[in-house]
Length: 361
Image 1: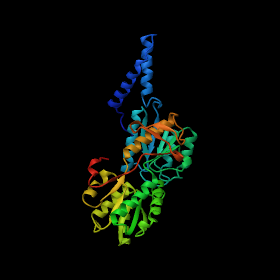
Image 2 (image 1 turned 135 degrees about the horizontal axis):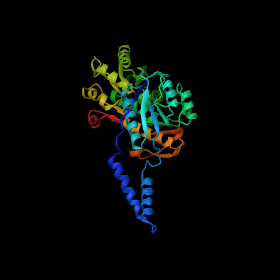
Image 3 (image 1 turned 180 degrees about the vertical axis):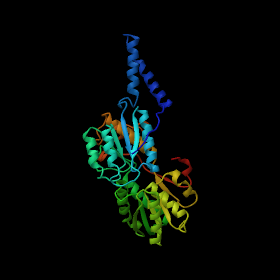
Image 4 (image 1 turned 120 degrees about the vertical axis):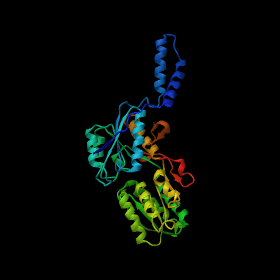
């Protein structure tokens, strides 16, 4: 089992100064009893002004990504672990080296035995992890899915990076703009059971039914299993099997980087359009060498940060996961829980040669 910790850092000076200022502002209402009472009132005011005051101290939370060596998942989890320091929690990341459907089960069982306060999981399969997650919930452990959802009954909250419908439909719109709305296209996905991938693909298929996309034909959905080499080989296979292919959508950071690497050194560079979801640091060289014109993603650091605060609010009893409840998400402000326990981070950003150097993740 692989476990990764981040070292504890001091609380932000700016945040501390803000709390102190609010605390001092509350000192105006002193009583005639004594200066001791006044000091007590100031302390109480300061505590109430602290947005993290209601979060239980010393919470133990664990991030369980699809796979431990996935660059995107590492960014998400590192940000969530760092966020835990802000509310005096203890966070860690554990996980498998492969993204198979059942690979996360043993880790969940271990986290139950360790009596974690919350488990945050990016599910490789929506149902394969349900049994142990239900056991965790029965023992009072809060369960938050992020990035890739579990079945709804197996968690309290789902932290969604953006509207699933908007992600799926926008990927088709982006590719259509790049290929002029005509030609054969393919999708290079992660695993066949990945909840997020399949949800996005459902919306992609639906979007392609619209009249404005009548000139585009989806010929193949390939699966690289979020493995770099397999995704590389799947890209090669797609281009050889479909000589008239005009574009590929790869809604996975591992897949799009591997596909770009193959196309950049092949005869298809400049002829086949590649887009999808990737990180700026992964894709920068491929954008600058002309292999990829545009791709999209949200800020994964904010996703991990939001998930961490959501888990803390659950574990502290501030929320239950019901629609309409709100919670403090640190620098991201208050967030509202939507239908089926979903909390949406925000819309994705489209990256191209004009803005990619403005981002570092």
